[in-house]
Amino acid sequence: SLRLQLLMSALQSNPDWAGVLSTVELFGWQRPGMERYIQWQNSLLTPEEHERSRFVELPGLHQTGLYRGSALKDIGGYRDLPDWPVDMDFWGRFFEEGLKVAKISDARAAYRWRQHPSQSTRTHGRCSLENLRMCKAHFLAGRECGPVRNRDVQVWSVGSTLTAWVEEMRKHCKSVKAVEYKPGRPMPVEEKQLLCAPSRPARLFAFGSDKVRQRVLQCIVSFDPQHDWFVA
Picture 1 (cartoon, rainbow, N blue to C red):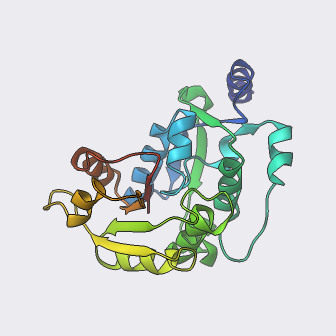
Picture 2 (tube, rainbow, N blue to C red):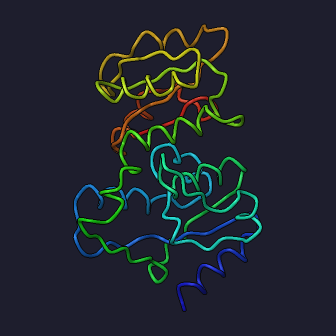
């Protein structure tokens, strides 16, 4: 099909990619929340954007992609686990191996994803916010190559989101500090302390809205991709 031809061409033209994805078109029982999610997901095109977004949500639908067989063998293929979704586990191990994936925006290659009330994305227990958070924390700090493993961690957010992320990260990290922060409000004292700290902590900014995450980038001038991550 033309769709596969476009994916294959992109993969052959980029030998450093382990896989290539397409954008997604929704049809059927559509809802604003899912539409916002897919709009965000479709905006991620480069390998760097996919890799940096993996702790926010799935940076791409695994079923839209074409992958090199060697890459799938390297990560051990798919695992059907009771605790969290197969696709999030797949991407966690994929990026853990340092593999690269990108997305092509050609509308002719778009994957059409039918929506309905009973689909597992909406109904399966493994897809709950609690289980998704558990999976993300596991790949952030629960494995040897997690980017915040064995580091002091600060979680910046508000309300129940802040509480939940702090509790989850404390299962993996010895030092986890809650920082109450909402973009637009006065900067917390932790931002000033960062300038004179002997060692820099890893910071997790827990915000589900892409608009809010963009505001964080505008407000936090010290944001450093080497130490700071968005989660949701």
